[in-house]
View 1 (spheres, rainbow, N blue to C red):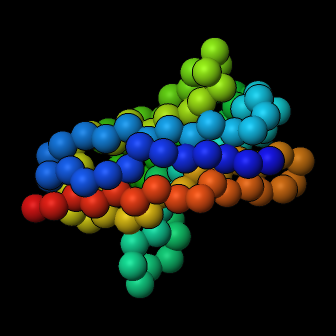
View 2: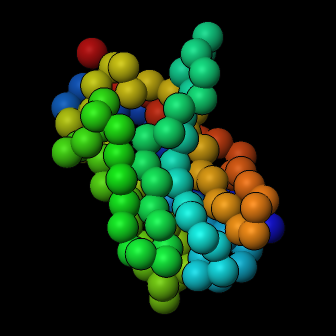
Length: 115
């Protein structure tokens, strides 16, 4: 399984970006998909998780109300819309998919938020 992530870039604080992740097979074959991020010198952290069986997303408090996970079945793509971005959101963002006990990662896309 391969996950192709894209959509990162540079934005000023308060701005928005949308990340995309296109898996090499139907995302309906996965149990869970999510987005993680890793800032320099910090551990990778979860920013959005989507249970494909229940159709429900969850977010940590640090991004709740600002980030939104969505899917497009026709394009076999999942998204992370990020609003009201802050400099603390600067990180490499990774798409993740879980299937039958295995975890798959995309290549990461850089998001830089300037103050």
